[in-house]
Length: 294
Ligand SMILES: NC(=O)c1ccc[n+]([C@@H]2O[C@H](COP(=O)([O-])OP(=O)(O)OC[C@H]3O[C@@H](n4cnc5c(N)ncnc54)[C@H](OP(=O)(O)O)[C@@H]3O)[C@@H](O)[C@H]2O)c1
Image 1 (cartoon, protein in one colour):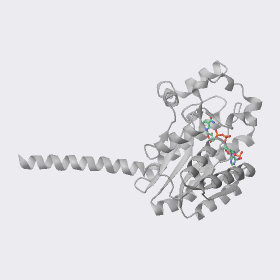
Image 2: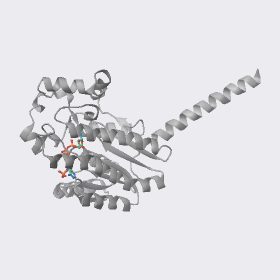
Image 3: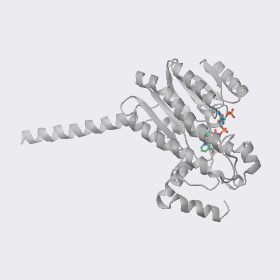
Image 4: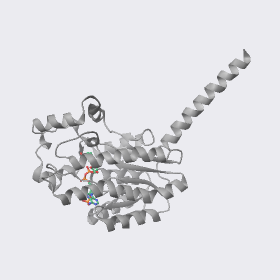
């Protein structure tokens, strides 16, 4: 009888141990504020969600490498953050749809000794069907949303793995779960980021590096104020106010969720919306939208 109890206790202990190990190796660690020595790199830091990441991480004592095309915006932000929080902020103006600029940023990431967080956030949207939008915009989007994050991640990972500490946040979108007419390349490239993150997370299990695919819904940023949307957008005024989130709320959700599952969808409504393709196939939703002229 006593032997039996022992066997049960050992079995239960092994099960709890295995569950904890699986959880730990999947999580790779949760978000920790900086200690005044760690660095974070953020692409698309000159506005919106990227700027909100920069503000939050500087307040949490991370040194920052800020990347985007608009140098003045980056420099203004860098001055503000270093003055307010006493952290080092380096700006690296780059067009991440260009091969040589991706290479330049990748090299800098590889040189940063204590790079602990990489946020692949730079992105843009277009308005119009695939054939209506220029080939140039489509290929820029493919490069910016897929090639740049992949190459930057490739460059950042060796240091993180060696130090057994780090996180990659790939900013995708709820669009990743849909086939939205007028967003063929956008939906496809954002889906790439989800699958890329999920697979990478499995490969990195137990190595101290966390991967997240952050999938925001409508977020108040410069995204919908861009030239593309100003000249072609008709659907935005119809988007109800309750669907919108702030960049700060998106960033808080992301950091809170880091290491607790790969896909992070900020906001209960967005989580519900992202589940609809499980009930109705994405192409049926897409066809219905097209039929209603959305
Ligand atoms: N806002 C939303 O509703 C929403 C929803 C879901 C997902 N997202 C995603 O969130 C991410 C951030 O967008 P946001 O909403 O914060 O919009 P945003 O305010 O327009 O910010 C986009 C950022 O990307 C940078 N960027 C664009 N093209 C670039 C290029 N070729 N090279 C380097 N940087 C480039 C922009 O900086 P420069 O112009 O200075 O280069 C800017 O800093 C995007 O990936 C977007 O797809 C947004």
